[in-house]
Length: 279
Image 1: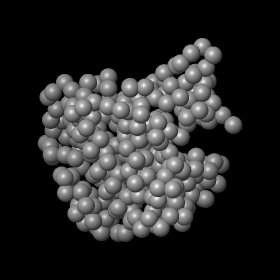
Image 2: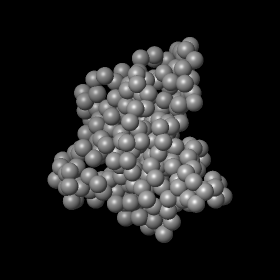
Image 3: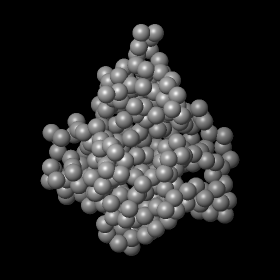
Image 4: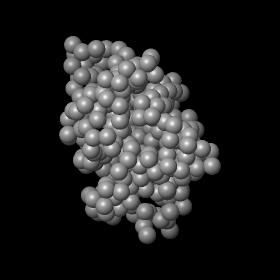
């Protein structure tokens, strides 16, 4: 991983439409830092912002989980965007951001290998069914917000760069990293950490702008192209309690996971719900 100063310079050059771009050696949480900045009524008003770090000491995953990371083994960064949508539509951003992240990274690998890079609803990225990256999306009202549909979205990603074997042993499940992909793909091997951040951040920026302008057009069809759960039998749980079992069959226009079983088709909403592929 390049030094923080070099990452900052490179990313500022690669992301000229971003109002603030910074990379630091260590912080508690990049999502938390941007949330604090957004809520400050005296803070900067022009966005988007990007903040990345080599090490997070209080990194967060979905459903309040702790994000495991070590210096130089994970790519961790967050972006803040303004979006104008009714509050009821905000949960649809989770699968949208997951699929555009998957599309962006697929564009950096050889076409013959792209099918191995998939998305697990609502927004985990997988390589050959092993977790490669996680995404956390949080929303708040900016300290300068006046419009009812104006929300500030903080998107954070943790992407495994290397050392997945150690993490797999610690978590007792297979984890993937970009080094595994790069070892099989010269195109992926040519991507620097800054290249990966820039391509994902721009994909988020474009997706947020399109959602503001047009809503969530073609979401189920786009998701079908990256769906890592399609046709698999799933258990859906909430805090360890079984909510639903069925075969995964895509998502609806609201971004809800669709499960089919003997009683019909069931939309699974966002929330603190984990989806486990049954063996």
